[in-house]
Length: 296
Image (cartoon, rainbow, N blue to C red; front, side, top):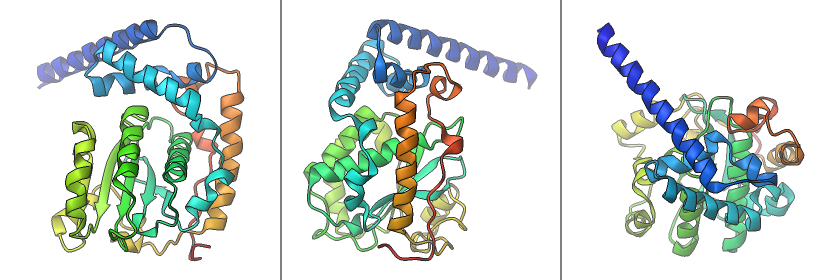
């Protein structure tokens, strides 16, 4: 037993040494960086670009360079809540007030609450919340969980295929390895045709993280509950919580987070623990308060 454990430990240490070597190689291939690009490209970040490309430095370099170009023009870290608040009025996407059992930040998506028509603004809103989720990752955690509630969804209020494809593209190519798990809850039968198209936009790793849950299917419900405390899950997602999205309260918290986000990116400190470990000042970031009030 000890011999097997010792070999396993040696294998893990060897893998970690190989990973560190690949990270150094990628860092050298990218070359000198400055400003926000330097802050973004932590060792933990570089690892995320190596993993989906099977540790191929050349492929990872291209992927990372594409992201750095995208970030330099799209400037996701500069988006502020007041610019996207209208998109969030119905609570169609928001950061939950709880984490999953692994301590991951949770985003709740409710496509049936779609309230706008601009693809650009919808994606900008989601990117803002992705950045906000990263801002609030607990120490030692690098991923988030998505809960997608399809109650009220229909083809009439669904986003166009083009928007879905662009969303998947941004998630996979510019936020690699940030999604830990995604549960799609109570999908209507008509979604099956939509899914047959959408799934072709996903790479294998992303596809494997997507789980379908139906309230009448005990096995799928148990799978989701193995990731989430039933007391935290909203009632509409099969849990016991009576939480409701409160747009006014959520807006206050996002405004506070905007200040912390700006402070982080404006800071000249390149060597704080939070930066070197690949995340922001999570322990001081307040969580959203979702109370019994309805969305405003």
